[in-house]
Amino acid sequence: MNIPQLQIQTTPAKIGLQVTKPVQEIEQPRASLSIQQPAAILDISTTRPQLSLDTTENRADLDLKSAFRRIAENAQYGHQKVQEGIGRRAQEGSQLMKIENGASIADIIKQSTERPMAQLQVKFVGDRTKIKTDVTAGSLDIQVKPQKPIIDAQINKPIHNYTPGKVDVVMEQYGSIDIDWKV
Image (cartoon, one colour):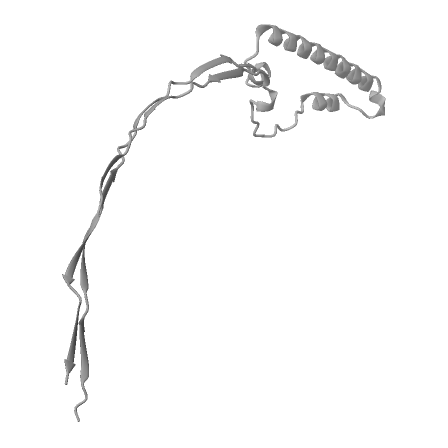
């Protein structure tokens, strides 16, 4: 026996999308910038230092003495030698008065003519510690007045171009239903 059959055939619908992408262009021009820095005002004042050196004693060690000093030293030396001579003559007179105690004129002569051997020595002259120094300090005064910079900035607006995108819907295939009876 033949049973009737129902046959259904479907075809799906198909949609197609055509997409145009959007385009965005942004350009930022650099800012126009002008900077000027005026020089600072600088005021400097100084007082010179003073240095005074007294080398009188150093020069005296090198036998470079002034006439007044040389006269005073020679007068003192002469006075000292006179005093020594008087003392020596008094001592020799005392020895001659006591000649009976065994002192002889030869001994007295020997004492006055014998000189000790001179010793050789190295002597450094010009001692730097004898230099007298006097220092008057100087001064330095610095005044600085800074100047503010002059800044001129021009901001440029961005350049913006935009093309919007779009979507087109296209029907690529229409849907359908076929119903068929088979007996």
